[in-house]
Length: 289
Image (cartoon, rainbow, N blue to C red):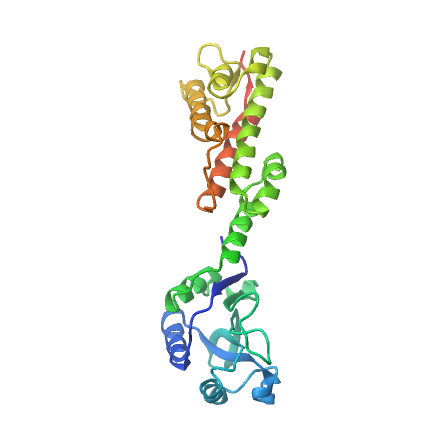
């Protein structure tokens, strides 16, 4: 899930790459670009103009000062018969940070794609997601580690809505401690299921965990809870197996101090969404009569 700014590792670019990009943008997306800000300004004071350098000047100076330019912008838009209509997409190429020494940025050199205007006037035009996919292929771009982590957290905030689950996992997701987040979610599911059983009048659940707790809650013969959406003839048994599978697969792993996620971002949000689904089942279950 993308945010409105996507940051990529810098790739080496020359004037030929920009010429090819302009041709491909027009052919594939119906877009073109004009040149925006270029730094350092002392290369040509006219670059301080709000409209950026003229195209012919840019090509000449890009070749002449290619080893000196530390940042430039491309403003991507749709060409119109009545003139140029600026689009919501900008490309910022940051080559160096210090204007005098031209050393690599302490943040590290990057290529950043920006979604500037998300207004409705663009209708069915190219989406930012489509534009990012196109640029990734054209310039063989790779997201920075910082952006990858930020994208995971953004997806998490947009996907997980259970307030209890959010309060228990958000700090760990923010610091990219995915194992702690998932472990806490597993503990929460077990605790919530136990409390639901006790509330339904089954005090036997107080000392139970995992597999036995799932049987006490949803066992076909003597379970104390009826799951929501009780349509299938074996809904209770199916729910019991669902929780037993989660406890055996995820909860038990953390009980034995296993590392499930490690540094991997893959599927952590899907795992937590599955936890949220199980919590919803518990919240909507009713005492069995």
